[in-house]
Every structure is written in C-alpha cells, then in structure tokens.
Length: 114
Image (cartoon, rainbow, N blue to C red):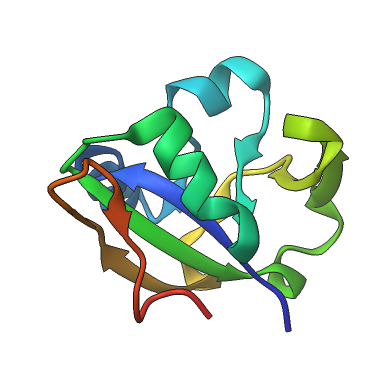
C-alpha cells in the first residue's frame, strides 16, 4: 500500500475538520488539484516550500482510497508526484501528525513516515 502525504497548516486542517472535507490550500485551489508527495519526496517538499513553519501537520493518506481522482504527474525534476483532482474526504485520511521544527529550520519526520 502506498502512502502519500500532504503538508497542511493547522488553520486549513481545522477548517477541513469542521466541513468534513479538505478542498486544498491556496496553492492547490489555484492549480486545480491537491498537491501530495510520496514518502521519499515529502522532506524535500517541506524544506523547499515550508522551511521554518511551525504551524504544519503531516496528513497521511493511503493512495488506493482515492481512486481515479489521483494522478501521478511529472513535477519537480520530472519526478512523478501524486495530485488529487477532487476534494479529500477526511474518511480517507489514515493519520495526521504535527511537525516539529529543529534548530536548523527543517522539519522532523522521524517516526511518522511509513
């Protein structure tokens, strides 16, 4: 089973919990799909786009639960990244973990990536 990951602000996730669905962050809404990363991509994504942010959660989803709305498409460095072309129903979320930030400004993914 393939787990994919979404970095989400606490505020965006709180709104998703209230509505029962995550429609995406600002960049997702602008691009027309929800950006995810595979396990081997998520740390670089965090460092590149979210360095130093202390308000992040790591949302883990089993890719198979998303069906045909999930597409693997070329992105950074021509690597295939998972993109969800539908809102994320919270029932498809396997787990949500807070991300701590080290003194180096990088997020600590130890013990939460599968």
